[in-house]
Length: 62
Image 1 (tube, one colour):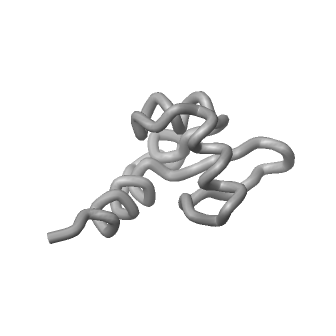
Image 2 (cartoon, helix red, strand yellow):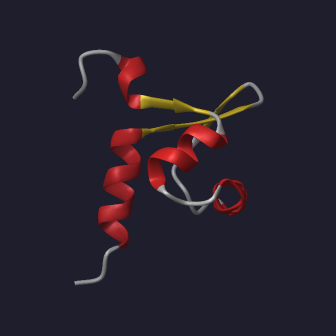
């Protein structure tokens, strides 16, 4: 667990895109389908780095 919550939270599709490597449009599309781990803070799209890393690990096929 991170010591500071702000170190783990990404705010905005642009930040999520930079961290994940997915294009910004793909982030919006996956979130709209409920296929990407995210949450909303008002109108802002947000995600936790730790949750994205875990989600990507779960998507990998052995």
